[in-house]
Length: 469
Ligand SMILES: Cc1cc2nc3c(=O)[nH]c(=O)nc-3n(C[C@H](O)[C@H](O)[C@H](O)COP(=O)(O)OP(=O)(O)OC[C@H]3O[C@@H](n4cnc5c(N)ncnc54)[C@H](O)[C@@H]3O)c2cc1C
Image 1 (cartoon, rainbow, N blue to C red):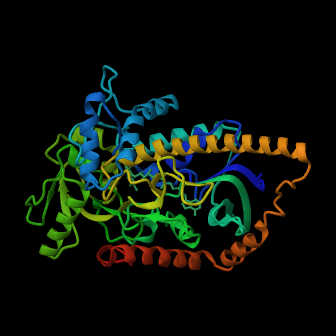
Image 2 (cartoon, helix red, strand yellow; image 1 turned 90 degrees about the horizontal axis):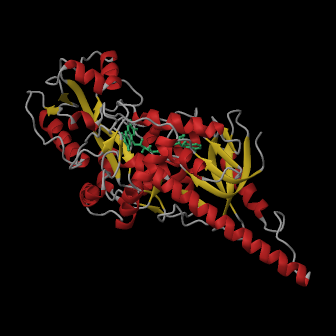
Image 3 (cartoon, rainbow, N blue to C red; image 1 turned 180 degrees about the vertical axis):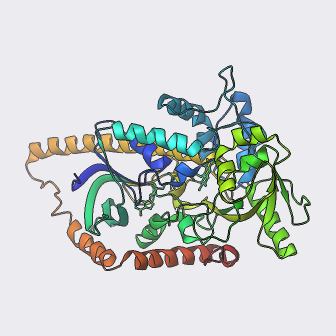
């Protein structure tokens, strides 16, 4: 049953949110909420895999691949932390029952994707996200200290009215439409990216960047919100709704991009933004809205075994990957920017943390290297949980000290909810959000985010936003 106060609230049940909750001690009272069903996250959709440092000799090459893909705008400390933590993360996932593809001798069957200079990606068929996320969900459901509310939307943050730089909780809208305030010592935002704002996106349409609009309303700093990755290859269709991703690993395994004359026009293994730009240019040159991807030179049984999910989806759309080219076009895919955080997920608002695609610690620079996002989500979610534990221990010590001094002097009044003055801010938040129906709120949030992207990069905005994409 929903309580009024928790120690930690986690907003979002993708890889980042689930892993953050699992990384907190089992006696921490945690509320997790998600806008949709628990498994409906972009994490669940991840196909290609999760990068990992293969061995110590791979460090320099992995570091350089990540930096090169990110146009050397990456935060080097974040890159270092991500790579160094990767093996421990994979070991934890194995401990949670996650299975990765292996050879007969039991060694990992690493794969490769665009801009990786070697095979260092772990996968589970072409459904790696489903494998990881579903196993994390099983673990979360086992934990008695974690309460999960599905179909529940965060519509605002609660800040302290006397000290507006302190987060005290969130305002939620339940599936019944009822709006409630829920308080917490710490709030973790793990609401993913902004794909739902775009007409063409590989993301779930309910993932609409709510945290960014809410952050803007509370003066929480964002970083590089205009660094948005357009994936080169989504299955082309005139149908509305989420576009089906054709994973980079298809190109990694030898798939080639062709124009309408059947000619190759780009090195398929270049970083995503370079391949996207080449496809866009080719489409403009030819006056078409798609190009083609062909992998039919590989034996059919290998294609079906390696890409069962993609093969099946293409069949459903009327294309046989083993025999013919499939039409593909670029679509919005990932946000490198987000809420500005340090390497422990702390935002510029006290007690507010951001992890996963919602957060920007600079690890991806201007462009994400393939298969780095699941890894990044897990690494920094664990670190945010670690930071919250440290903060709560510090706060406990501070309070013990305070109570000790209080008993000594009997002179100071302990702060209570009443005298911290949160009530007036609460009411302000309630009025602002309560009056908006879901569509009006979506529009308000969308306009706020569009404005911010346009302010940062008008050329990108004109080319890809405002539902031009
Ligand atoms: C098709 C596809 C394929 C991909 N393939 C790969 C891959 O192979 N390798 C890789 O590393 N990365 C891949 N990615 C990217 C990766 O999956 C995501 O970037 C990453 O998993 C993000 O995880 P997350 O937990 O931050 O967010 P998500 O998994 O997107 O989860 C966001 C959560 O927040 C909830 N939410 C959103 N707004 C609210 C709100 N206002 N209130 C309450 N809940 C809210 C959502 O319901 C959801 O539960 C892929 C992405 C897509 C879309």
